[in-house]
Amino acid sequence: MTLTLIGVNHKTAPIALREKIAIGRGELADTTRALAAVPGVSECMIVSTCNRVELISIVEGDEVPVAAFLSRHFGIDASVIAPHLYEYRGNDAVSHLFRMAASLDSMVVGEPQILGQVKEAFAVARAAGTVSGQLEHLLQGAFAAAKKARSETGIGSSSVSIASVAVDLARKIFGSLEGRTVFLVGAGKMSEIAARHLVQQGAGTILVSNRTAERARRMAQEFQGSILPEIIDFSQLYDAASRADIVISSTGAPHPIFRPEHGQAFLHKRRNRPMFFIDIAVPRDVDPSMNNLDGIFVYDIDDLQQVAASHMEERSHAAIDAEALIALEVERFHQRQRTVNVAPAIVALQRRAEEIRVAEMERLHSRLGTLTVEQLAAVEALTRGLVNKFLHQPMAALKQAAREGDSAKLDALCEEWSVSPVAASETPSASPHNASRAPDEPVPGRGHGQGEKIAGSAVFEGDVEVSR
Image (spheres, rainbow, N blue to C red):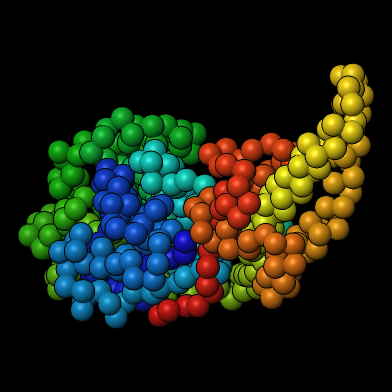
């Protein structure tokens, strides 16, 4: 089994491509199940945000066509997507996932939204039945590492996000937002964050519109006592938009909702006073051809990268600290995983020792004569105790070799004690508690035969970055 992560993000692909393969919330479960149906994929989840689409899979073999899934599912020629894809396998995939969850791979380093988005993608995959033990273990490790990075370094010390960068851009455009009318189209999380920053920057009037009016009302209620946003019915979207100096749009619409004909009407009503659109949606809400209209200025999410770069200098030291912490957490994850993966060899060693103990007890049964229940229990306890004492050193040696990643030593120890080290890489899941199972306690779903495969797994094989 191999962990594979394939995707595109804001660093490798323009928004024109990302919006073609963006997966909305309503489509994510079905798309995840479609990926799980690809031959050779045993577990999977998909992270789809405004800045990335990543397929995270546990696959059987090296030729599973995960990359081809994107072009086939979205009907895009593979040659169009291929130059923008990156692929990580094994340990490199673990490292990328941990860094992504900690927002070290984000357009705005330190933004808190990505962790919630990864958690949501994981929850969707679990509900869809495409996640089991291996991705469960991996994602829980990534979540814990990301939380630790935010609590123990300065990376999360200030509230920076795509929405806050959009507001910062609006402020730079006008010099000040005081007295300006801002129209928030879409009342999702991005808009909520943008609204808070707009209030802090002194915006004069805030208009809010959403396809679901109740959501717009809930967001507006959060600002009572400062600025009470005016709720615009979505059917009145185009009539109200001409009032706005700045439109920040973040809907889940599959096609642009603002087109050149709308822009011309807005300019006419505004008597050619300029109007700025900041489009933080993927797919885009604003047709880029609106930029061709005199007096209309459109900025999409890729344009925000230049503004986001200005935040990096002040956060660079915190990012360095967070990178070091995440690297340490990745190594700890691998150490834990190697210990889990040696569990089958330990269980096999315990089983072999128990077989010998039971055989000796049976051979000496006639010599022992008739024993009371208490006497038999004492003999059983004595022999089990001796076996456990003899096993302590070899089991400790196996665990140490696993923790150190010393495969040569691990193979030598397994050969010396006649247990198989490959059981771990031949079966799909590992149970850490198996290593401490009583010697005569059967592993669920397995027999007692010597040399039989023991339930366990080498979760992620290989550590080579295939392409970037």
